[in-house]
Image 1 (cartoon, rainbow, N blue to C red):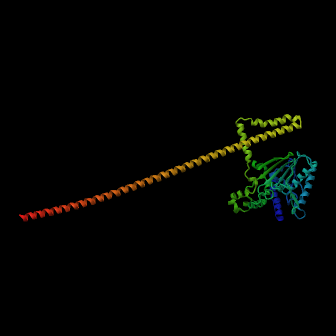
Image 2 (cartoon, rainbow, N blue to C red):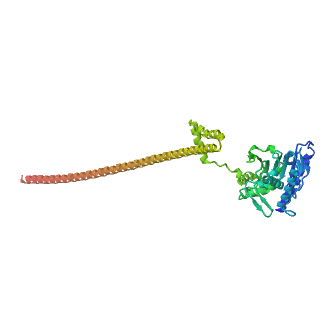
Image 3 (cartoon, helix red, strand yellow):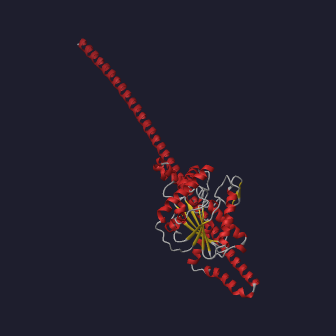
Length: 435
């Protein structure tokens, strides 16, 4: 880690110096103000032309002054000791200066600047007029969202804390995916973590050279604290993922990697919707559309407060109570309306279910009736077929008996004929013999 910090610091010095040398010959001599600059780790002092290139030449026309500090995290001093020395030097420089002033802290120097602001928050009696001083911190590792409470680091001998609330205007510049200042708050996203480490080399320096006028509105956040201080935060978007910059063979997969990496940052989460508030807003809108005096009712409470403000704190308190009562009543009515709507919807669903069940039962009864009718018809057909078969069989038997009777009669007739013939022959023979 020590070697990594020193390498990163050396890279900052060399890169900024190279860019500064390009612009140094074109800088006009006219001075527009005074700027104090505190460099990062490995930058105990900064050359004049390097300071003039910060934030795309934002301070090119200023009278710039370097604030020295040890700028080391190990060796002769711990990080905490270095910051403490730098804080003392910056406090002395500010107290000895009169007039409009801009203070710039970069990386480790941003920690120095933030500690000066914390000193002013704890000692407002020695703090300069907010109208005279503006502060700019670049790549400040202590201003990440997940640093919401003091965290002591024994190795660095420094307590990371959330920035103090001060009456000064502060500009915060952060490079997207910079592992020092924009580490993923969802640290279990390992792809995002590896990309952030790569971003230390690719994004850390670039944020110090960015042109803030080119930052899109969606990447600018403005907040005003209770002391009147305005903090304007700029997120400098990366033109490509640090991983693909260091490992070009990953470029074909950059789109898919970006989706995974962006999930490691809560700022990319879909906004949460308060369902209860949405329902109440919808109900309130319906009431207003229907012409009910809901809007007038809501305006009555502030009117009461305004009218009683001259009457003393007691009447003002009563007005506030009335205001809360009106709001509670309105909320109760909204909840009752929601409950009634839900009950009506449930009743409608029950009726639809009952109708469907009745229809299904009727259909089942129809099917059973059809089946019974079909079965009865089939049975009737079977009975008719059996009767026809029986009648046919009986007819056949009668026909057989008639045939047998005819045969018997025929045979009888034949016998009678034969007998008659025999008798006739016999009679003829007898007559012939007699003759």
